[in-house]
Length: 155
Image (cartoon, rainbow, N blue to C red):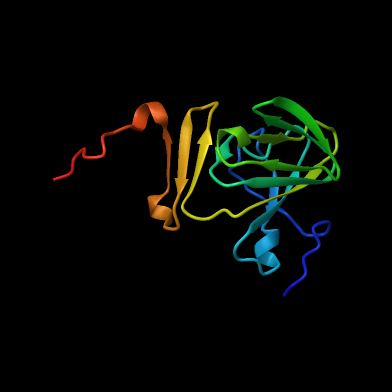
């Protein structure tokens, strides 16, 4: 099994991420040989968030490795400092958003079982994303725009 040091691994930034969500990522779990648990390392520059406020239908975990972040949850916002561990339960009670409001970069580790198909709900924008293994079947829809009857257009 390969070793991965989360304090030295290089993260990659996606060029298409909008302002406010520009963070680096490294697939630490798969780099270490993992298959059943998804473990990702994120580097958040000052003022950037990991992703929009959302919840999934699987438990997710956060460990702050370096820096200070602000975690939004259904209970409000709370600071999380180096070494703090948080669990986000499956469903609406586990909604969360991680933001670096400090001046220095922050590094966090997040993990979950991340089985496909995966579903994420974004309460602020009223969207639902569905990620099955086939990329051609992935969708992001706004709930208000997308509800159809089960039998719609079926023969």
